[in-house]
Structures are given as C-alpha cells and as structure tokens.
Image 1 (cartoon, rainbow, N blue to C red):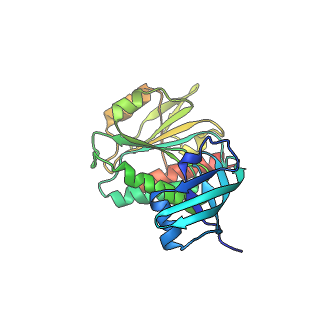
Image 2: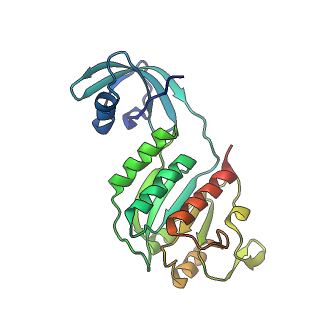
Image 3: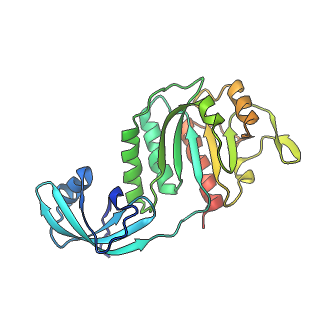
Length: 251
C-alpha cells in the first residue's frame, strides 16, 4: 500500500470552490519538492486543520513553487466528543514542552494554553516553534483538526475568563472540594470527567501551583483533582490529563 503524503495548507479552510488550485508554501513546499522529490502528476493529501482532507495532484513543480489541483474534498468526522483544553505552566527545558505538544496532538485534543504561575520556571514560550510541532504531529498522526495554540497568560487572567463546561485543577495539596451536593477529598480526574462536556484541565509547574492559586481557581469554579499517587513531572502530568480526556470522550 502506497504511503499517503500529507501536507498542511490552512488557506483551504472554508473554501467552497471545486476543482480548486493552490500552492504549497514555505516548509511544506520544500518538503514536497526537495525532500520527497515530488513532481508533476504526483498525488498528495492536503489538510486544512479545520476538519477536511483533500485529494490533490501536483500540477507544477518548479524551483520553490509547488502548485496543486484538488480532485476530491474529504470532510472528516470528529474522533472525540466535546472540547478538550489543556493549560500548563511550561517547563524550564523547552524540549519537554515540545515533547508534550507532539504526543498530545498524536493522542488528540483541541486547545493548548500556557500559564505564567507563581512558581513558573519559564515566562516566555516561542509559539511559532510549538505551532510547527503541532502541525507536524497533526500530519504524522493524520488528524483532521489542528489544536488551537494560545500564548502565555498570567494565571489570574486565565482563571478569570469565562469557560464553557467543566474546569479542573490538578495539584498535590490535600484538600476537599465540592462536587454537586457532596464534599469529598480530591477525586481521580478520570472518575469525574463527563463524556461530551467541554473540559479544561490545569497543570502546574514543577513546584506545583501555590496554595493561593489553587484557592483562587476553586473560587472561580475549578474543581481540585488528582492524577494518581505518583508524583509526575509537568509534561508527564499534562500528557496523562490529555489521555484521560481522550479516553473518556473517544468515539
């Protein structure tokens, strides 16, 4: 079976014209022409990052220009329910954040945010670099949707924003929280996730959220949860949370 070659072209999102012609740009064109050595007549798969694949044929491959003609539009069905949003304090070493972004995209989630917390070791994130990793992982894992990437935001500002659905904060403090009519010790995240409900999960830095941040989050509707008995690194905890959301919502 011939391997499908996927390329990302966000310009296609929302286009209704068929047949449609366009050009791959930048690194996508370079990969097609210089790495894979594709040429006129070669078939490729395109993705717009918004839920649609396209079967296309290269019509011109000259220099740095790669022109294609779309032969078929292939709308995709979502692979999970709800909207899965992970907000994390980035680690001091960016390669760990990049590893998380790649693996979480392969598993499947919808939105990634970065938090500037009291104990954060990193205050700046190169969004362009993370976005490239999201795109690469989306193509490699044949995902039809590219996760939304948000820039760094102060913890308090993030917490104050209105968000639809369920909201959870993962931390290592011992405390009780109110779940409906019942007050209980921190439950296991997977046990309180609800299928099909938009969900936001917060993951703190290596030094955890401060107790003041946890209390502030709870005052604004976030519920305290645990990811288990093991003490996890930030990027591991974030990936575990994404995997739990995905398992609960997978179709």
